[in-house]
Every structure is written in structure tokens, then in C-alpha cells.
Image 1 (spheres, rainbow, N blue to C red):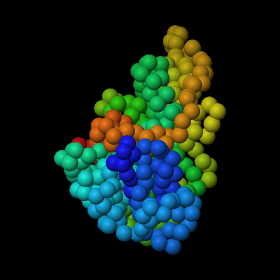
Image 2: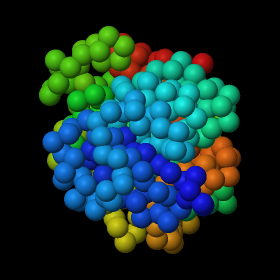
Image 3: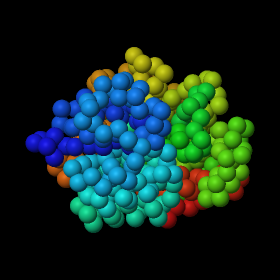
Image 4: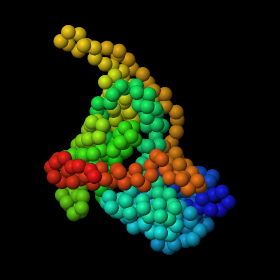
Length: 347
């Protein structure tokens, strides 16, 4: 550290890396000392766009930056397949790590990185941005008050026309957000999953491990939790009907998180049944808009990571272990998708 400032290097300045770099540069407790971007033709534009000081190293040489002894922490926003090697080297070199989701594409690799961070007394935090979203935090408070009664099931839809990723499919890229929210709100992780999907755009991009038939453009998922709660999720990056909606249903109401409603993103839709003879009559119908404080989720992610580093305390919101649990669910979902929807148990 330099005084009270944490010296940080950022890896990757693509679509999401741009947002991360902007936030870290704005934090007074951070000094960005290096930026690694393999597209050297973009370097001049990056330096100009972010008004980087001449002292900030802008390079394509990741290994050289990772071995610098004056760097305390790194932020990794590179393709998922590169995460394991970069994070492992960073931890071995004594650097705290913030990694873009998913942590890795492999459960054993994710577990190894968690163990390595613990052994070296370093922080490994995963950028599951929605866990820092004011709406998700407000929703958790609603559920903690038992406003819905016993929880029954949940459902989510996440669709748009792009962006289409070349390294993972829509299941890995999109559903991780909704799974993270369900896990966070429920305080539990799935014990089994199933998935089906279709491929139109990238049938030629195959990986023996997760994508033997190519990258799915749409997927329908089911999550089974130990409490008996079940969630269904629909994701697609090939649907112009943009939706960002997640709901939890209880016996006294439904909590609705709808990002496409900017003025009322979180609503508690109350209602229950009252038995009358052989019929069930709706009762206690009400609609309550839940107050949500303002805040930029990614800014909160960056601040949280820096605080974890400064205090050398594990994240209670988005630790490496939480990231590993999500990777475990995604691996099982990929197995199910490749087996035409067969239910897969999680260990």
C-alpha cells in the first residue's frame, strides 16, 4: 500500500472491464498502477478515455505485472477460461483478487483457488454485482420479515438481443445472476438442477467439458432447493423482448424484482386464498411498492472489495466460496443440458 491507498492492477478493459476501471479510478482509497489489455491497438484509446497518468503502466504482458512486488490487489475482467491461471498466479504472488463472474469454469479449480487464498491469507472476492444491488438488498429485508409467508416457488426471465459471448453460453453468462439472487434470498443452494436449451448462432464453438454441441442461445432451467423451494429460469441472448424479472412466491404474496420498471423495481404483491365451502376465494389483495435507496451496484462491489483487502476479512456477500457454489450449479446445469434435461444432483 501507499499510505492508506491500495495499489491495484486491472486485467481486461473490455465491456465490463471499462466499468470496473472507471469505478476503481474514482475511489480515493485506490491507486491504479497498471492496466493489462492484450489488444495493444486499444492502448492509446484507453489511456485517453480514462485520462491515465503517465505513471500507470499500460501493457499486454500479464505475467510481468503479476510479479510486481508493489501491487497489493488485482481486478480480473478477462474471458472466463483465463480466470484460473490468472487468479492462481496472482494469489501465489501475494495479491488479493477481485474476479469477474464466473470464478472459473471448473469446480475443482474454483475450490483450489479458495484454498490457495486461505493458505496465503488473501482475499478472493467475486463480482456477482446483483448481490450488491440496492433492490436485492431491500428484497432480502422484505423476506426476512416473513412478508410472503411460507415460500413456495420462484421464477425469473432474463432476455435481450445480445451481447453474445464467444467463450460461454447464455446459461453461464445470464442465469448466474438469477441463481445468485435466489441463493442469497433463500440462504441455501440447490441440491439438484435440470436444464434444456437450443443453439442457433455458435454451433461451431465447442468445448468437450461444457459445450460439446456449441454455445446455447436460450435455456430453461429448474433449481431444486433443500427446503422444497423450486425455481424456474428462462435466459436468452437471442430475444429482442428485453426482460429482467425475478419473483419469489409465498402463500401470502409475491415479491417482484423487475429492472424494466425503473421507478418501481421492487413490488410486494399481496394476496392469499380463503376457503369457502368447496371453493378458494382470493383475499387480502394489495400492492405495495418497496422503497429502495439509490446506489450503483458495481461501485458497491469495488468499495466492498477494497474494504475486504484493507481489513483482510473474508467477504460475507460474494466470497470465493459463494462463487464456487455458483460454478457448481452451472456445471451441473450444463451436464443436464447436454443430457437433454436429465435431473443432476449436486454434491
